[in-house]
Image (cartoon, rainbow, N blue to C red; front, top):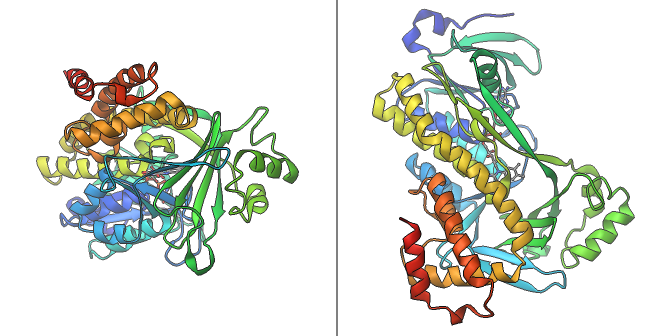
Length: 461
Ligand SMILES: Cc1cc2nc3c(=O)[nH]c(=O)nc-3n(C[C@H](O)[C@H](O)[C@H](O)COP(=O)(O)OP(=O)(O)OC[C@H]3O[C@@H](n4cnc5c(N)ncnc54)[C@H](O)[C@@H]3O)c2cc1C
């Protein structure tokens, strides 16, 4: 059955803003719009995760940092979100022999990222959105078609298979990496550009359960990394004492998901490479066999908008690999900028707001996509590299001595006032200089810190 909702037919002005996808970005955007008094309808393909025990999706927990926190503060829910998080002020590096080294992310413990439950955060955002009378979320409604010209979407009910077409005053695509709204743009806009660069690595999630009495088996306040050249294992803490581990690993080749094809090979591999993790990975065999291998890719597309009809936010516009822990943060930042543009141009002036949003965000979406791929190689290859470690020591000294020096990681993670594109450009120039200075010295104490600082200042131009 196909119908256009009565509400939409009665008066166009009263037509709701339609958001496709009640994920992280879609739900946050709904809160921003609800606070402006707009009527918002969200169509979500999955069931209500507050009522059904479904896995929230790709990863159990996420690193939330300043760029993501700022929008949550703007809508007034940051405290609630952070109360559920675990602070991670640095990386804990696990060498093959079990030796541990803690590397702070920022200048001191006051700078940290937060490990947050993806499901918990999504549920909270949906509940906060639904607390507004003008927001409705429709679950089990997969968007199967979008007519950009008519500003309608067609959704199919998961259970009844009933289809209906609803009309909005505009459509926001918050429907993730496989966005139906973006697919419609691709089909309906001449010369549309969309590409995905797949990494040759995939990922698999594993779990370290809590110790007795909800204790943490590893240092609680750190993002743990086992860097091993062409692959790595990481672990993020959860509030209940468990850790969610992710193995980033080649899909094919001599040492790969494909080659670890028996329990014996998996066991032998983990004992050789991640010896100190093995006693805690109590369900290794079961999880390695049953948990899927996720794909990792960088999506770039253009345009992100169709005049006043539709706009993309979050992964729908720029799905990225997870190595900077910024996909959600960037998605939340999209919502903040889109909200600002709507405020600037006035509610209803969608075309002007969308155009400015796209101008402000597209190059930054590309930049964080590139940064994330670059950080994959850095985490995998360099974190255990002596020159890289000296560079981190030097950066740390600089950050503690000069208030206006920020490492690339800090620029991306702790400086939301600096756009991603600027952070990438400046950060990469800083990295090149510091790596060069560190490559031929044994001890960073031998460098004149002020001279290094002056050279870095010149890079700012
Ligand atoms: C392994 C991994 C680890 C990550 N770690 C981090 C991290 O530490 N920090 C960080 O900031 N980011 C991280 N990310 C990235 C982060 O998960 C995404 O950037 C974020 O989820 C994007 O939010 P979104 O709302 O745009 O998309 P999603 O979270 O994917 O939400 C999209 C929503 O749309 C719904 N939907 C999809 N299609 C349709 C349709 N046709 N009709 C209706 N509804 C639809 C989906 O069900 C979903 O609810 C990680 C990603 C991965 C894969």
